[in-house]
Length: 78
Image 1: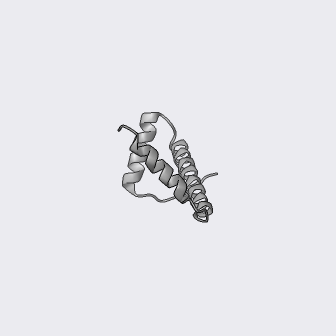
Image 2 (image 1 turned 90 degrees about the horizontal axis):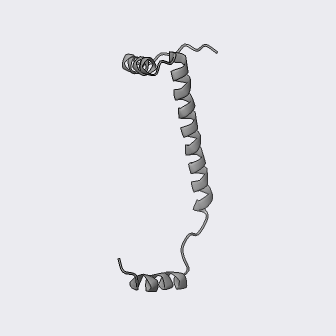
Image 3 (image 1 turned 90 degrees about the vertical axis):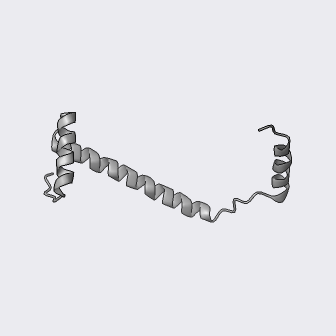
């Protein structure tokens, strides 16, 4: 599919340089960049959703466990 977009000149020139160095067509470079952006954005959505799920979870340790961990750490040599 062909799409016409407007981007700032410095961004266009930087992309042209990268495409030239990599010996790839401009359209392939833009497709790769957009694919990368979409993957990163999807990862952000996953992180946001996981944060929502675990925000309802009480992650505090029981007092006995905290006490036992503190006791064990006193015997460790750092």
